[in-house]
Image (tube, rainbow, N blue to C red):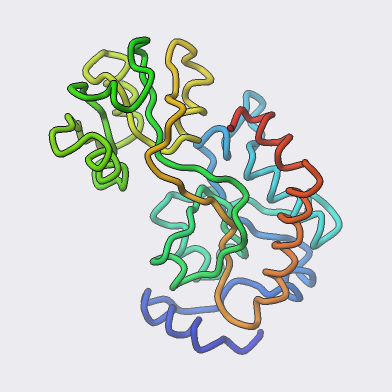
Length: 255
C-alpha cells in the first residue's frame, strides 16, 4: 500500500473516512481490474439497454481507458453511484476513477483532481410548446427546475426575478409535470434532456444554453496518482484527436 499524501489524509479527515485511497496506476495493473464509478440511470451517459447491458457515452470512455491501462476493454468493474455518493466512493477506495456525469467546478477541484473535459454539458431547456423557440419566449411561462439546482440562478439571470420557476424534487417529477401540462418547460442538464427526449419526440430542446458544465474524469489528488492521471489524460486527448469522441457523441445524440 502506498503512503498517502498529506492532501489525501486531510480529505479523509474532512469526510470522516478511514481506509485506503483509490488505487495508483501500479496497483490497478497488479489487480487487473479498473474500478469506475458511473451512472446507470442517465441516458445517454450511462444506462441499461433493453438487453440489460450497461451502455452510454461514459461507459464507452471507461472501456477505452481500461483498454489503455490493462490491455482489455473488459478488464473493468462498474459501480453505479448516486450523485451524493460519487466523491465519497472515490475517497473511500471503492472506485479508482469517477466517470459519472461529474462537472468540474472550483469546490470539487479542491477535493479531487480532474482530467481535461470529454463533454461540454450545461443547463438547457426542453418544452413541448412549438411557439417556444428561444429563451426569451419563456417569459411568463412556468419552468420546472430541480430544487437547489444551479439552473435557478441561471434562469433568473436570463429571465429576471419574475421568472416563473416551479421547484421539483426530482427530474422524474419535472417530466411528469411537463407531460401533464402543469409546467411549460423544464430546465436541466442538456445531456439529461436529450436522453429523455429520445423516448418523447414531441418535445424539443432549445439550442441556447444557460450555462456550460465541462464533464471530466475525477481521480484522487496527490503525486502518487500523477502517472494514472497522465494515462487517462492521454486516452482522452487521443480520442479527441482521432475523432473517436466526436463519433461517439453523434452516436449517442449529443451535440
